[in-house]
Image (cartoon, rainbow, N blue to C red):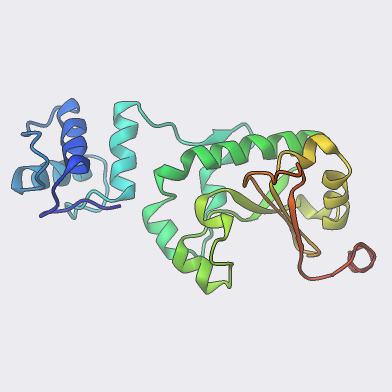
Length: 221
C-alpha cells in the first residue's frame, strides 16, 4: 500500500509517528497533507530515493530501516538482490515489499540447510520473488508463491548435481522434505521449492512440469 496526499487514517498516523521519531516535526493527525508531503520528500532526498512524496513500499522500508524496526533478509550465502529478476522492472524499481521480508528470511534459512546437506555446493536462484505483473508476464500461477517471496527455482551451480539428483536428494530425506510445502519437479533447468504451509498429511504439495516422470527426467538430465 502506498500513502500520498489526500489519504487519511491510522496508516497515515503511523507514518507520521515514525517520521516524528526520525526528527521531523509533524502533527500526528492521520491526514496526509502538505507538511507530511514535505517530510516524506525530505526523507526521500536524504535517502537518495525517488523524490515523489509518495510513501510507497521502498520509502516505507527505508523508514523502518532508519528506525531499526526492520532487518534486511540475508544469510551467509544469500542476499536479497539474488531473489530479484533482472527482467522484473517493478521489483527493480520498488524492491521486494517489506511485508514479505519475513517470508524471504525463512526461505533463505531453509535454502542454507539444503545447501549444507549437499556438501556446501552453491545453489543458484533462477527465479525468486516476482512482482504480480512480472509473474503474469512469465505465465506464473495466479496464486504463485513467488509473489510473496516464499518460493525459489534453484539449481546447483554448473549443474554439478543435476536437477533430477537434487530433487531426489530432497524427496528421500524426510527432514529436508518437511522444509518445503511445495515442490515442483521435472525441469532440467531448476527445482521449484516454496515455504507454503505443509498439508495436513505432512507431505508437500507436488507437481510436475517438463518431464512427467522420474525416469524421463533422469534421462533428460
